[in-house]
Image (tube, rainbow, N blue to C red):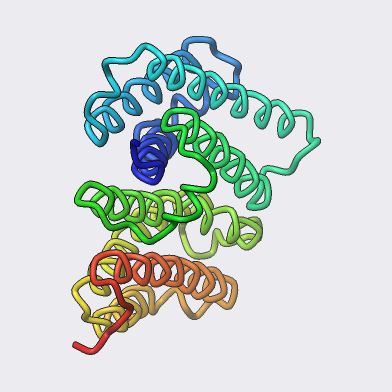
Length: 262
């Protein structure tokens, strides 16, 4: 019996890459304009990345036509969810905020879970009996990849949506537009969460404190603005919290226990 967890991790890794790494700003803008080519490109990326990752993680699946049918179905459902969300946001039925983003990602995760079950078909009783933390040689690197990509890139969207209300205020006195501030924060956040994750995996938690110190020094002149200080502190603490949560998951995955003794 193929591993349900391996199938889920492979498919979810594909989802994260498709949504947060391989989807350009131009593709997002074209999807908002209901461009068929943008949706087709996004779906193709999702399909081929899922085939690649899952075919590598579980050798032998690529020999069955049902495997490709399941992946194609997942890609089509993925596109349908994206289309529906954009339409609801455009009609102002849903707000383009953190709640919508998290709800959208939760629905995507459920579709990935269902597809993994359809591909592996584990009996429910066997699945519950064998429920445990990632143990196999392929599951651990998949967990590491999912956490790194999810926290670094997916976490950036969470931080951006949650701090968006703060950037609606006039911050032009700082010499930066709202978009410039958000873009700079996004790139810095990627590096920040990468360093936090890696520091915890290497069991060097003191490095996390150095990040906050370095950012505070670099942004010291702007910290004189109360509005910017709020934006900076909330964004930084949210970003570091996501990194710490991801780091704890990786410690449990790689070492079997959460410890920062070094």
